[in-house]
Image (cartoon, rainbow, N blue to C red; front, side, top):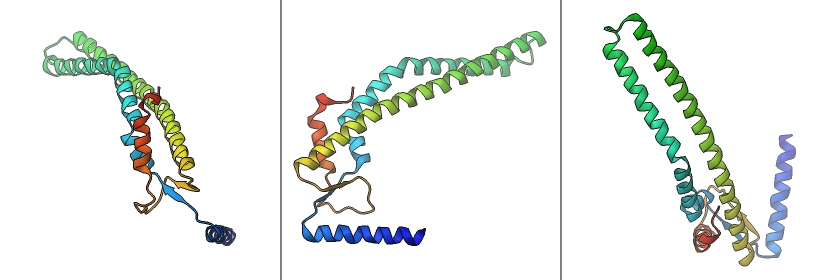
Length: 172
């Protein structure tokens, strides 16, 4: 199995070398993570998500303060309360804590889902721009992951600039 894979890989390298010898192959590289980090579309999506989830986040913070207050009250006055009052406060604390954890879990799930939706549209846009640059400048191959890349073939800045120029086409 491994030997067959190596033979196929070697054949691919030889074939690519033969094609490269016949004609010049134009290769480029784009640092996808840097493009995402620096694109105006990603910044816009981040602000949009912050605004969308701001109210729920504030509600969770308020609930966390309420839980802390209940716990402090129990610790401070628990010994002086009647048994039934203490049990009622503990039940209230446990119910509130359970509700807080449920809401917090739902918040994280919803936020992750929305982040993934926004990122998917941004990745689509970035890939369209990369393809546009590749076609305009007649590249044969564009890589997005590499161990080393020389500055001569790095197209990251060009892709970021194209994205910035097309802010109006930002992810919706």
